[in-house]
Image (cartoon, rainbow, N blue to C red; front, top):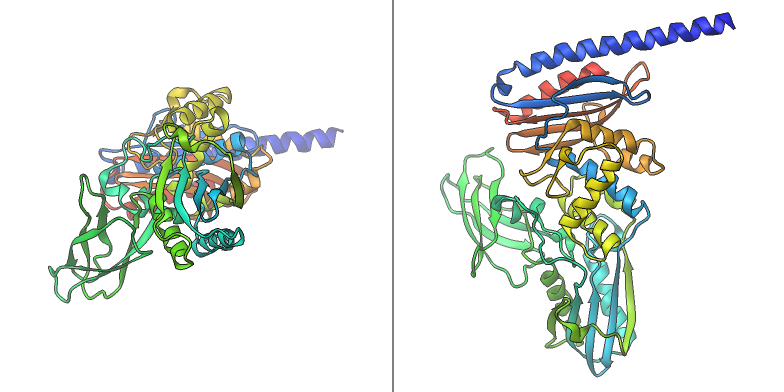
Length: 464
């Protein structure tokens, strides 16, 4: 027994000594980081816990709210796992009512963010449309006079507070709708000139845009200048525009944009396919909300096809791996849909704050306005993020959550990037077997992000 006690005491001293050593190294490295010229007018926050004991290894500015950028997605993901469940799925129903010679096709929108996505074989655009057209054919429906999209239960607002105009026309700024389609994005093919300053032509869009036009105000820039072209929605009536630059000598330079209305793009695509089969020559499209009560009745309504989305676990895998803002915003709004019957971003944020307050995070440390972190109005503390990660590792859904985190610098962590903002939040298992949980946020740095990232890695390397 004495030998066993001696071994245990020795082990405890070793663990304490190692923790002190890591803390000392982090303190020195972080001090050097803060004194770097890139942080002359900036602020940084670092919070590190022992993943097993919960011991605080290092903290600096851990309770200061900073812009988290996409590291905020770990909060949205963990909350969705807890309040919706890892097996949650979106269900989109297609039904028909009226006379088969001329009736109504009804789509009950569920908010499914993966409808038409290319990431799963059964969610692809061609598969979804084909299944609906075939379902109409199996019912011997001769003509569809109206396509009704039931969007009741979802708030009209699709763009969160604070998203900037340069973002919302581009793929990463796609708003979350009741009826999402193809991740609400399209590709735009551009052709630049042979000389710097030449105008840039729009060659095509994929898919073809329905009810929406774009004009190019893009110019040709020097070779190697990269993608500096942005799509802007029209502020009033008229076409949207593409502004900025792309490199010289490009024949098919692709940028990705966001649909102004994914629902209209979907119904337009469906109408074209139904028309090819002679089923919807002049079908009108109506988006039904609570004011359009004349469409709410279910008499004579026959369910003809149901699409079930991938599981929430699978959605979160791509949400974090590819940092898909649409998935984060949709999952956030779905929380209040399941709780209160209305998909509301504001109500969902209140539910999120209440949940984490019960887990020990003050609401003042989660000053958020969206689920993705794209809004520059968000303020989150690194301590709050670490508490979320600490809670997650004890849950039955942790493996899915952990596997969704990208790998940077040989560490599992979610990154976040905005103008003047960089963050890394995640887990690391060191060579000696210790697990660390950390959040490292930097705001208002100057100079290139690439050089700052290497300096942040240098600090985090002390955990290896």
